[in-house]
Image 1 (tube, rainbow, N blue to C red):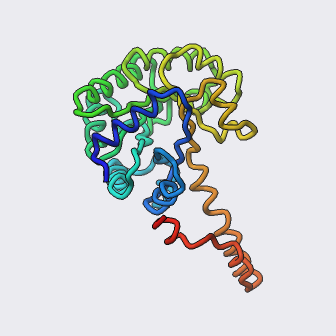
Image 2 (image 1 turned 60 degrees about the vertical axis):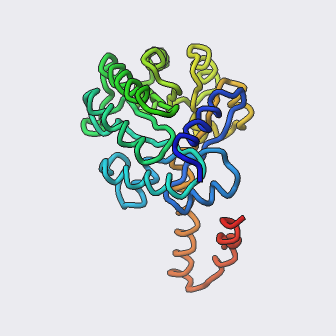
Length: 269
């Protein structure tokens, strides 16, 4: 098993390289191990997918639940793990910095913080959002490993359809010390290309909003890291629902034909 520092170094190297990479989003330990066995180079947690496993809505998990979740995934995987750390579970910069240090102690190799407040359900004002990234970056600089800090501009995802403000925020987050930038609400290739031209840090893209495009196309438009959010977690329930309906309504077992190969063999290589 790689050490925390080695995982951080491996994750940083992925961002330093020229090639774009896919970072899928497991929602629990089992899905993390499956995705690792399939050959991905890194993993990213999903706040919505994890919340689903607890029967909660996105944004409703506690900091302790998040820390425990990350600790378990980091402990069983050999891959670097990036955490969807939501708003950092604090409003003030000092609280964000303290929590960044706590999430790093779980063994993950990076995390993202966003400019959307979990409590008020509103975008955080520009200056305050930048101060939060500055505090997080300062906390990261004090670590003995190249922990990767991702800063998210949430406005397009939250109904504030202002691409100029997205770029303004991402540029400010870059100047504040973020290693990776992320605007999860981007949905058009031309907007992705424009954003990528306006920043110099690696850009994470939520690939599910570009379902008609390939990874290669996204990379050509400037994406360096491509994630899928809670899509895998949601998709995993579709066959369960269909099978349960067949069993309940028809009383038949035709759904058994859709069982996957032996997962134990997959995980054992």
